[in-house]
Image 1: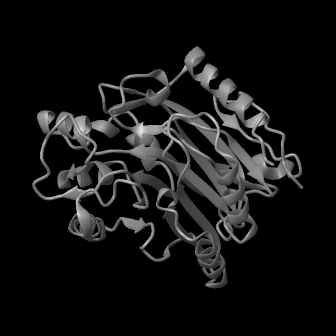
Image 2: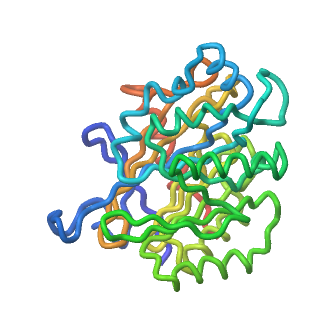
Length: 321
């Protein structure tokens, strides 16, 4: 059944989406216990440790600076997943211009400071420094026990509280074979992954709604085994859909980015999901706003409410056919 109802609930200042066919999405049916615990997961928008963000960190000699106002929230989770929008390479030039991105390898300090567990590398800037840049990034992440997912990387897994989480990622802008995507999703579930998270880098930039082909791919992903779809690339936040009781976050918008020219590119979302018995039972949305070309903070009060109301409105009118 297509799920179309999205309710806005202001309880302790958070936003919860409710599935029409599964009201238990917002509450656990039984109490938490040590044998079958709840697991929390945080997902974010695009993170670019390059260009002006890199210039700011280098100038301040502080590679944790972008996370200064969000790290406590990010660390307070069992799993945190981000989209890393640039390779971390040796001798990355410091610049505030251009579209060929790289980040200083010292940005790993920020990732560790914020407790990042998994990064998606399937995006349109991961190869900006070629194969060597991607290899340096993968090696740096591996050395610091941060998982990296994203084609051509294989499925990666991480066990949390006896639940085996799987991560896959694709850059749809490269027009990968969608039959192969679906095959990999099916195989991941067959390999006894309990909860499968699929990251898609997709869609048109600076748009409030995903295209029909994006929605169709998201639904196919869920139909074939994905438990959560995590989308990015548009640089604006987009609707959240609950499809067959499983969340599709079409775009978080930016998280750490230097696109200072508009409110839309400076406003993004963090999502916090609670997973119980391999199902999402709670989804909370936390709006952020980017300042100083690099540093997000949590919106509060009227500004927060305005974003949540807009998110509710666009989610309710999301075309699903």
